[in-house]
Length: 336
Image (cartoon, rainbow, N blue to C red; front, top):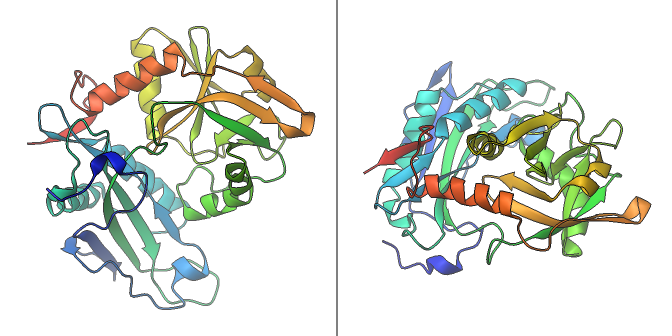
């Protein structure tokens, strides 16, 4: 195992020994292979650079309490990347190849899997890019699939704590029926104009729907959850990413007897919520203490500390991922 201070890892890139690559050319995917070459050799006119043909994913492997390694729901990431690829006229990565590349990246970087009890995990960033040289507007024919592993600590350092969000009505992250449901870099670049000023004020950004600026869409780079009594609420929108973490939490909420509702959520409904949070692979659950609406000079006060429902769901998911609870939904692939 590498000499790394696992307790001090944040959500930052740590150089692994190997990445995994596979190219698509002449209608064929090559066998994934591990390499210590971390640089791309691209033509300057590659479609990923000229026209944004790029999609990515994020998933984790956990060293459990029993010493076994668990890869969490990678098949769902493979399916979501395939949907993103089809949305951008890219060649989807076959699920079998995706899984083989993840396992190879794990096997070649075993020394970078954090020990149990540190709170750190091994994160995988699968990346798909168009590599065909092209100046005329149109999709490429050639692609490269890359899996970048890195040990990471919590997205939000310190204990499970609350974050303040600020509403932004002046920047739209993604249009209805646009690329918002795909995990592509352009969506994140489009959010920087709102998220960076929010971060500079010590807050994160809450996006509303782009059509009416009335309904909650996403929390910067994460899905939104609201708790009303025994109801788990999350937005229904044609412009947000279908989160695998959110899907997992909805399943656990149902297991715990909660009503799960996916619908349009008006911003004003925050006043009736006992708890709210952002959720995603990186942050898992990030509870919200308050939401500031500067256009109306209004503050929606939630809980200063993580509430009981979100805390229970957070620990239920983490217990499955670290092997402390039964994986009755068969979400984890075990590696002895």
